Length: 131
Image 1 (tube, rainbow, N blue to C red):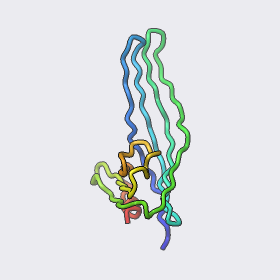
Image 2: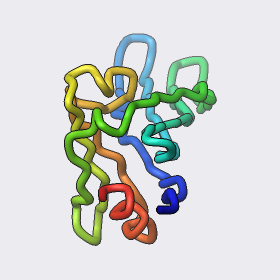
Image 3: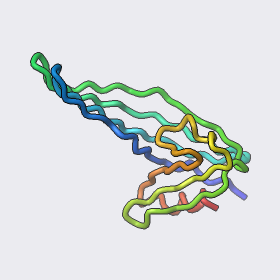
Image 4: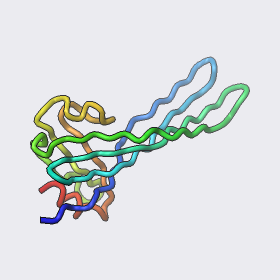
């Protein structure tokens, strides 16, 4: 059986806003990656950008920093469940692991559960990964 192609995904990493005596700082993240399934291994790789908007007495500006490439490899049998959820408007692939620490290195993971946001046009490919 042929292996499905990589599935592009986004991670919704929360940002932060701070207001203080030194000004206003707003930090946001855009994290995108690919999910690969090959040779009974599940590989998640991702990278992104961190954008910092600053308004201070001496400066108004935006700084953008590239985040390093990161990845996690897991045996497929560590995945307890994989489902496409969110309907047509906001589809995502939800992965549930058999171990609590399986997704520890992945941002936005909550214990053994990880949500990978996918584009609407990639829903069919996400369903392939869920099987």
